[in-house]
Amino acid sequence: MSIQEITRWVSELINQHHYWAAPIVFLLAFGESLAFLSLLLPATVILLALGALLADSVVPFWWLWAAASAGAWLGDSVSYWLGYHFKDNVTNWWPLSRKPWLLARGHAFFERWGTLSIFLGRFFGPLRAIVPLVGGICAMPRLPFQLANLASACLWAFAMLTPGAFAMPWLMAWLN
Image 1 (cartoon, rainbow, N blue to C red):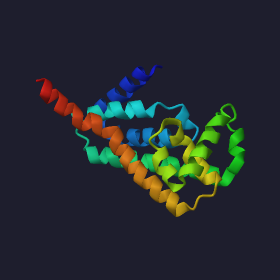
Image 2: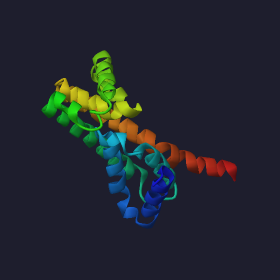
Image 3: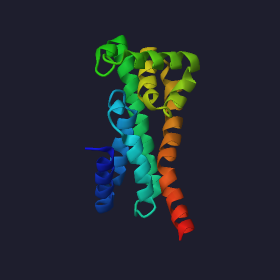
Image 4: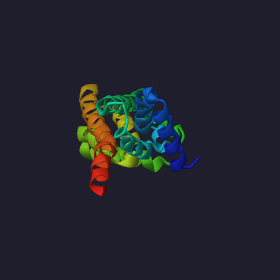
């Protein structure tokens, strides 16, 4: 399945069954933030497209923002936990076993920016999945990790859903 087909399928599912919107958005944000799975799941594109559906949806924007924030927060929390408990053994897990440079880049980013790397990493593709894992491997204290994780999850979720949800109605009104 192509990314367009997946996006269309998810969009149609939500259009037909709006009560599934929040759980789907939660799972997409979780998968996009979870180490390993994030490298395979094109959730960013889907979430951006779903934002456009919000303009005509009966589901309130803030409900889906909360679901996306919670999913992103939990994904990074699980990634941190995996790193914290399994340490360097994660280098033997796929896909890191085939792409060791991802962990090296994530570690360099973490060493340079510290706690701020947890916040910033969420907004940069492959770093989104790796930096929380590295934070756990390096035994970053939990409180600073979770504060940066929560703040970045809330902002990231807003950034994913807002363009379509608020710009689409404005654009349609402007075009008419």
